Length: 60
Image 1 (tube, rainbow, N blue to C red):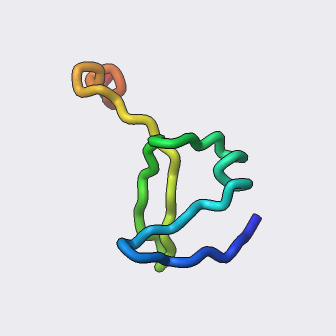
Image 2: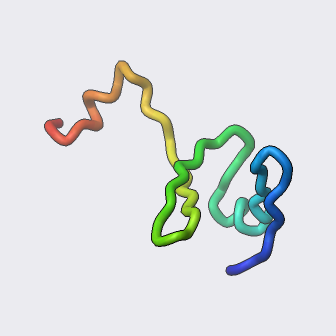
């Protein structure tokens, strides 16, 4: 799936509805963003509360 979107004022972009629906994205969901080989990559993510972070550590 590929679409063209516009980069707007305040660095805003809109994820096309079909893509957001396919990923199950909803308002206020978190996305990790990073650069990879000159591309912007967005990855849906879930925040882990600090008091539970130990459970998700490599040592656990």
